[in-house]
Image (tube, rainbow, N blue to C red; front, side, top):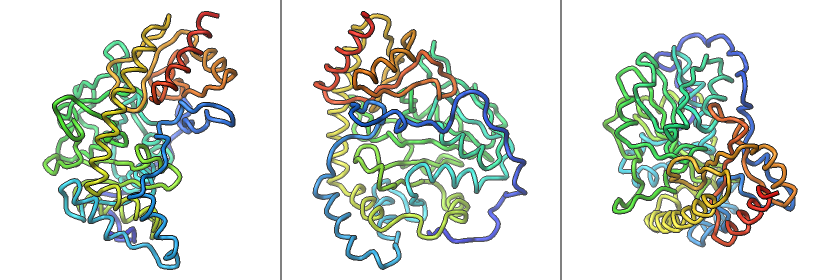
Length: 370
C-alpha cells in the first residue's frame, strides 16, 4: 500500500469548520520539553540503550542505497507476518504520531469524535488541527483511571484510547476495549507501549488487539521508537481492515517512511526481535516494581493504580514546585497538568534501572522532607 492519492475517501464530506483551541491543558507539550543539558531524563518514555547488532546493522546497511526511493513492501510484509495479518492490513508511518494525523485528515466525515482521557495528547491535537469538534471522556482517578465502556457515548463514530495508556500506565482488559466497537464506528487503540507489558502466565503482549481481525472498525496504532530507542528515526505502523487503511493511505505523503526506518521495521518484526522484546519487558516489570516500592515509602506520594508500562503516574500535593526542585537537583520528570483529566499535583516518572531509581527517590525524599 502506498501513500498516493486514491480519490475521495468513502464517507468523506466537506472539511468541518476549524475547531477552537482546546481550553485548559497544552496539548502540544511533551516530555522532551522537560529534558535538558545535565538532567537525568525521567521525563521521556524511550528506553536508553544502543540498538543491538541485529537492528543497527540493517539500518547502517541502507546508508549506501539512499539514492533509491523507499520500497515499503518488504517491511510491510514482515510486520504483517509478525501479527498474523495480510500486508494490506498494515500501513507504515513516520512514527505513531503520523498515524494520528492521517486518521484526523482521512476521517473528516465523522460527526462525533471522542477521545478517552487522560491519554497521549497527540490524537486530540491532530483531530483539532484537522477541524474536528472533539469530545472528551475523562476517566476517574478514584477508580484508578479504569475504562468503563458505558461512559463512551453510544453515537460516537470515532473513539480514541490508549492501551497501556500514557500517562496513567493502565492496561485495560481487551474485553473492555472490544466492547467499544460497533458498526459505523472507528475504534482507534494506541498500542505504542504494548510491547512493554507483561502479565504472569500470559506470554506475549497481554490485552493487545494487534492480531484481532474480528473487531469492526478497529485501528491499532503501534510504535517502534520506545523499546528500541528509535525516537529520532520515526517509525510506526497502523493495523486494520484494508479498506480503512486505504482511506488513510490516500492522505499520506508519498515515500513518508525513509529507507533506514523501513529496515528498522523489518528487523523489529523478526523472531529474534520479538524474543528480545519479551526479555526486555520482563526486566522492565522488575524495575517498575522497584520504582513503585521506593515511591510508596515517600510521604505524600501516591502511585496511581497498578502501573503496567514503562512509566508510572504519581499524585503528590505541590507537585509543580517539587518538579522545579527536582530540576535544580538534576532530575527531569514529566509534568501532569498538560494531560486532560489531570492537574498540577500529578507527575509522570519513567522506569529506569534500580540504581537510577534509588538515586532519584533519595533526592525526591530529601526535597519532600525539606
